Amino acid sequence: MDDRETRAWLQLNRADGLGAGTLAMLVERFGSASTVVSSSPAALRGAGLSEAQAQALREADAAGIAADLDWLAQGNRRLLTLADAAYPPQLREIARPPPLLFCQGDTELLTLPQLAIVGARNATPQGLQNAHDFAAELARRGLVITSGLALGIDGAAHRGALSADAYTIAVCGTGLDRVYPARHKSLAHELAARGLLVSEFPTGVAALADHFPRRNRIISGLSLGVLVVEAARESGSLITARLALEQGREVMAIPGSIHNPQARGCHALIRQGAKLVETVDDVLEELGPLLGTRLAASIPAAARDAQQTARDPLTGRLLAALGDELLDVDALSARLGAPVSTIQAALTRLELEGGIAVTASGRYQRLSAAG
Image (spheres, rainbow, N blue to C red):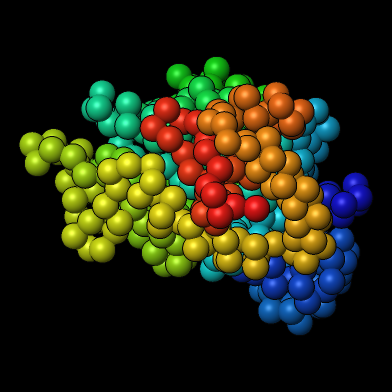
C-alpha cells in the first residue's frame, strides 16, 4: 500500500461519524480509499453519506493523521486494511470486521491458527496457573495464543506462550502508543518484540469502557475457538464467548470449584453447551476438524499453495527424523535446522492427522502407520 493510500485510509478512520460498515462500503463502491477522500461532496452524498458525514470526511483530524503516520514510520509497525491480502482471513469472516488494524510485531502470526484464552482479571492462583500452563502447552503444539493483555488470565496466557518460546497476540483496547493496564508495560514490549500487538484504535486513543467489547470481537474473530479459564457470572469474558458463538467459533471452558465465584461463568457456559476442558487434548480434539478444513479454506489460494509446497518436505523430514525415537520439539528443531515455531506447527498437523503421538513427557513418537 503506497503512502497516498495509507494516508487516505487514516483520513477515513479519523472522520467522525463514519462507522466500520460505512467505511467499508465507501471503499468498495469507489474502488480505493484515496478515490473516496478525493471525491466531490455530491459523489459522497450519492453514495449515501449525509452532508455532515461528507463534511466530517473533508475535515478529518489532520493532527491525528500525522500522529498515526509518525507511529507507523517507526520500525516493526504496519497498517493492515480490508483491502490488503494480508488482512487475517478469519477476521474478515465476521460481521463488520474492523476496517483497519494497527499492528506492532510479526503480522505473519495472523495467518496461523489461533486459540483465544480469556478470563477473569481478578483470577485465583489456580486460574492463573491453568491459563499459563494451558497456553504454554497449546503453544508448543503449534497454536498461537491470542488474548487481550488484561490483568489476570489474559496476562497469564500471554506469559505462558512466551515461556514456551512460542507465539502470542495481544488485541488492545487503546491505541498502540499506549499500554493498558500500565502494569503490563514490560509484557507489551516483550509481545511487540516476540509476538504481535493489534488494535483497531489509532494513536492517542485511551482506554474507554465501550472499547473492550469491540476488542473482544476481534479476539474471538481472529481465533478458531475461545477457551474461558475463569469468569464470574457477569464478565467481559462471557461477552467474548457470546461473540465467539455468534461468529461460529468453538467455545470451551475449564470447570472449577463450586465454591469459587470465578468459576460460575465457566459452569454457566458448560451448561449452555460449551466444551468442558480438563486437558490440552480436549482443546485439540475440539479444534482438530477446524485446523484441517476451515482454516485452510479461509487462506487465499496462492498462500495455501505456498504453504502446501513448504509443508510436504518438512512433514517427510519430521517423520524421518523421528524414526523409532522419542524426541521433543527442541531436539527436532536442532536436528532439522528449522525454527521451533515451524516444527511445532508441523507436529500439530501430524498429530491431528494421526501420524504421531505425544507422550506425557512432551516428546513425540512416530506411529507405525505414518508415512
